[in-house]
Amino acid sequence: MKPAVVGMQTPGMLLAAFWLAIGMPAGAQTLRGTVVDSESGEPVTLAYVGLLGEGGELTVAGLAGGDGGFALAAPTAGAYFLYVARTGYETLMEGVFELGEDGVLELQVGLKPTPIALDPLTVEGERRVSPLESVGFYERAALGRGHFMIREEIERVAVERISDALRYVPRISLLESRPMVGSPAVMRSPAVAFRLGGGQCSPTLYVDRTMVATGVNGPVRPDEFVVPSDVEAIEVYARSTEVPVLFDAMNDCGVIVIWTRMH
Image (cartoon, rainbow, N blue to C red):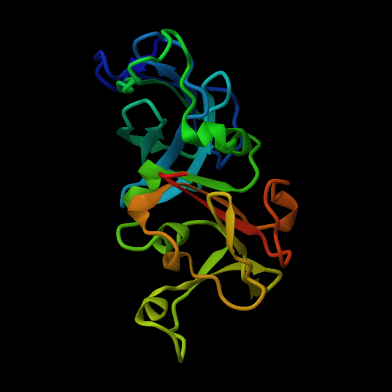
């Protein structure tokens, strides 16, 4: 079957799609493909790929693998936008894609590299490691445990409070009732809790490598520690069994890790 081109090919973007008849079970709507560098054609590993509903809400997301491949199963049939972001590349949002009740829509997505400023004495050919790579963020995300958000997604859903970004994470509740006592800042900051076993508990909170709240002695309010403009990425582990050894869940309630742009 000849591929149908659904996006214009430019130096910055290549987006081609075709339907595959592979006998997917009824009810499955899957967007599958490969993210490549639009200039070199090489796979772009660990790109953040998501499906957005027509209202702009994120419905499902994941990371491209080592070969640039990804597969996103939409929760229902309907119209979706494809959102792709990776450090060092221009963010891409393309659509609308109509996903039906069966089959797979196969894509090849080309991301345009963005220039990276190099220090004057950088050795030619030396690979610059991004801050998130240096702390193992992408390696942990590739394992498929927990929930991961990068700056582009955070900026889209959180303007004034970082808790607004956490609102979209599965198993998280925002407790917005105001405490009886406390500073005005505390009264404006929702507490974050995980829904576990019919109840709720307060997670351990890290900012960069520092534990800033244990969740043991009271509610955890991320807005007290960071604002969205300072945040580069977020990791959320709702189950204590998912938490990497690098972090401790002090009350067996899971962990939230916020990476700032200054770490």
